[in-house]
Image (tube, rainbow, N blue to C red; front, top):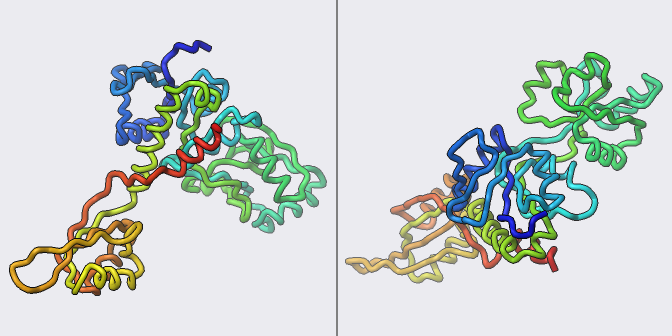
Length: 332
C-alpha cells in the first residue's frame, strides 16, 4: 500500500445507494466531480488530496478493511456481514438516512402453521432433517439463529435472486433483504414473525489503522463527521419564529415549558420586541421536529403567540457530535 497516495473515499458504483451517497456528500460540502459516468474514479475539487473510488458495496467493505481505501459508504447490512473479526474497520456513522431495508427470515406461504421463529421446529420435525436456508448473509444468519432458535440448520450461501429457492427445492426458506415486500407476495412468500435480524441503512466506515497513523485522514474524518452529523440532525427539524405576549422573558418561557412540543433543544431563545405601544411582546425562536409542526403551531397559539414564521434548518452543530466522540475514543 502506498503511503503517499491520496485519501480515498469509496462509494457504491451503481444504483440508488450510489446516487444518494453522492447527493449526501454534495449537501455537506463534499461535492463529487465525475465528468465521465463510465469512469471509476472521481475528485472532490474542494479537497485536492481526496479521490473518490466507485466499487460494488461488498468490495467497499473489503477495500476499507485492507486499508487500500480510507473511507466508504455502503449498506450497514453488508458491512456487518463482511467486516471481519479483527476490528480493522471503524463504523463512523450508522444512519445516513437512505438505503433503508430489513434483513428477515422468509418462508413459503404454504407453511400455514409456521408464522413465527418458534414455529420452525414444526417444519424441522416434519422434514426429519436440518432446514436448508439460502442467504447472502451467512454470518449474520448463523449468529442470529444460534442466539434465537434451537433448530438444526444448514446455510446455503447464494447470490442473485433468492425468492425462487423454496419453489425449486434449492432451500427450504431464505434469509434476505426486504424493502417493500411486493416481491415476496408475488413469489408466494411471507415474513416470519420474530425473524428480523436487523434494520439497516447506509453507513460510513473507515480503516482504523489509517485513522490512527495518518493525520490528514483523521482530519477528513473529523470534518466529515462534523458536517454529516449536523446535517442529519437538522434534516427532520424546523425553525419557528413567533411573537408572544408576556410580562418578561421568564414568564414567556414558563408558559412555553408547560407545553409538550415547543420547548426547543435546550430551551427557547427569547428577546424583547420594541413596539410602538405599551404592550409587551417577545420574539421566540424554537426548533421542533417536522412531524410535530401542527402541534407546535397549536401550542404557540395557546400561549398567546402570533406572527409565526417557519423555515428549514440546514445544520445543527453540537459541542461535539457523539459520532466524533466515539471515533476519538476508539482511536485512543
